[in-house]
Image (cartoon, rainbow, N blue to C red; front, top):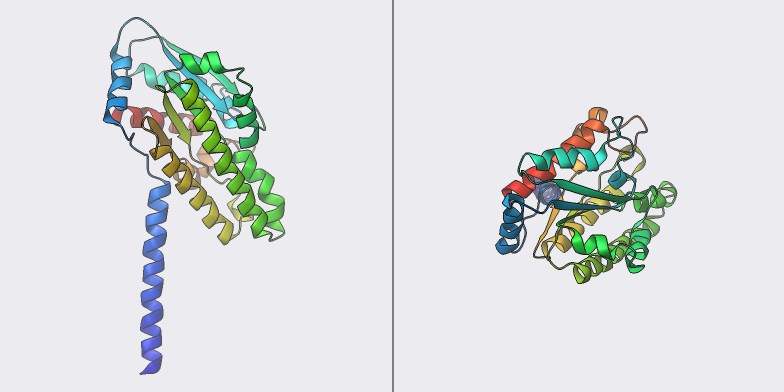
Length: 257
């Protein structure tokens, strides 16, 4: 009788764990909705207006830059093509992606105010950041130093929060789009740290949701389940098809919201 009770208890606990995990994965792969419907309306209105071009500013790391794309287009090319399907306006893209940039580097970049003019003019600001923070934490992860991994992610979230604050101070009205993180090295990441990555994406999503005019675009599911097609030969960056898939998701999210 006691053995049966223990077995049933363990089964119930396992089911609860699976449900919680399922909810967590759903949350980290969900496109957010802007908090303000007015903000979404303003962007839709901007897309439909005639005259002035739509200005897109791309900030962040090598993924923002478009590294890995065999066609050499990256978001500068594919996102422009996707947006052209929703507007007759000219699309002007300013790409400030930097290979190897970390969240600390992005924050310092914004604090320098060098890009204030571009930020002020931008209708859409696309950000890809955090991948290099993840790579930086890999050595400690391989050595089983979980605390170091957690500290790296805490630093990332703080840098992201400060960066978003600076962007909003410079431009309160632009639509900000943050790309979620994916993991090209799942074989090297412990189960505990994989959970931390999911948690990091979830907290990033919540941070974006607190903004009245921002979108969180998940990439984890796209890359995990299409790795042979969507990750380039360098085994790190998106391939041409990967950039296209993410650009399409961004475009669909803008249309929907």
